[in-house]
Image (cartoon, rainbow, N blue to C red; front, side, top):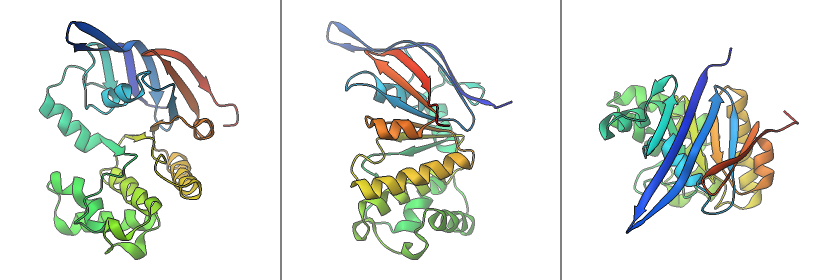
Length: 231
């Protein structure tokens, strides 16, 4: 039996803008099992980023329950959420979010530094991951000396460094030319084959088709949840 990684039950997220209450997510129910690759799609302003923030423990639901890896995280305080982000989640951003002063190896090691791992162990983990994403020859380069595709590979390696139970990617190929984008997507395909659970926000239908499922949002509601037939 596949282990359930994500369960959302009746998740609603509202924001107050002056006197207005804005419903970013409305009564969302969603289950994602270990090893699934899910694309979240929908028009701008439909709630994709809000959903990713809730899934990534960057934001709490206003109502409803969110269970991550069997643990109810919807009511945890900021410190506990921050600990879960560091230990159980991996984030991949459109803009890479690398530290310009650090080289490839050091950038990959950043999350381990926050966890207080020893230098020898964290270097060895980072070296393995640099090799895995095809940057074994580039470990001493700074981000400015890398192409966009290579910078995103560093971002992916950094996201994998704590062996997360869930990878969250926000338009990870959004800033890349199509050839580099395809290489990054092939890396995601490989991660999925190796059992990683991936949730990716994208507006690109071709990318959506690479996933096992497409979850479509509209106006903060779940519009459809379809399995891709080619898998």
